[in-house]
Length: 246
Ligand code: NDP
Image 1: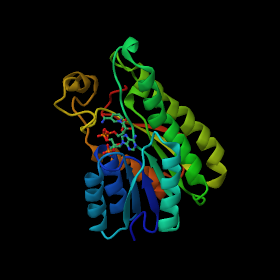
Image 2: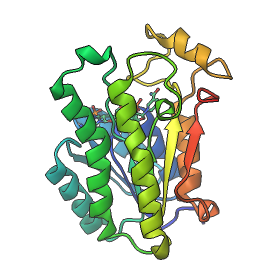
Image 3: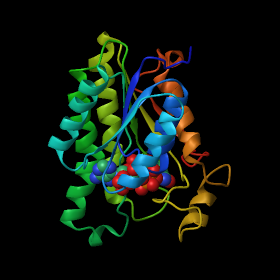
């Protein structure tokens, strides 16, 4: 049997990029997978097709992470539809970069709501459904570990908050055997951070490996954390960043 056979995973922002790779990888490992999206209904449907063709159940839910009621409803919907919920991956995120004076209050609200409040609310909501031995995996950023260039005040603030959330939840949920970990991607080729974008060469230069990672690189570590082999890993921040933060 596959490692995650019989498990149900919920991945926020699973229509593109890292979330898509995570959703498909967890399905390859045997899980049934629900994913959220904000705008990309067609892309989300394609991910559902990929997962279904692997012989796993899949469901795409429209849920704006900025709306806590939508996040809660999605979580409850997944548990109702699949009968259980074992793995939460808080992946949906937005990046607003720029000189601190140019960041608007609206930007602050959006980034903190999507990157911080939504993972908090999703964790609260899944706990009512998650059995002992569950998994919460947050997606942070190498910029929570090393702010290598200017313009990251808001984004780094949001991603660093996940360190506190991860550690506090790990402490609180340990007695239930639920592990909580934080994966820090480095420059990863997605729509958010294209390999040929204006800042790409600079970012490449900050890594030890001298290149971008792929969404599959991040998904491999998420899959490890979701599996039984990582049962003694909790409260950890794990870089998948090509050495960006060293
Ligand atoms: P992309 O922009 O390529 O994809 C973002 C995904 O999140 C999409 O599925 C998008 O849905 C979804 N999403 C965005 N906002 C919302 C929202 N308000 N509600 C619901 N879903 C939403 O991003 P990446 O794959 O690059 O990033 C994934 C995570 O990894 C983020 O948390 C990001 O901060 C983090 N990260 C990425 C790095 C990189 O270099 N790429 C580096 C470090 C961290 P839709 O398709 O509907 O828009």
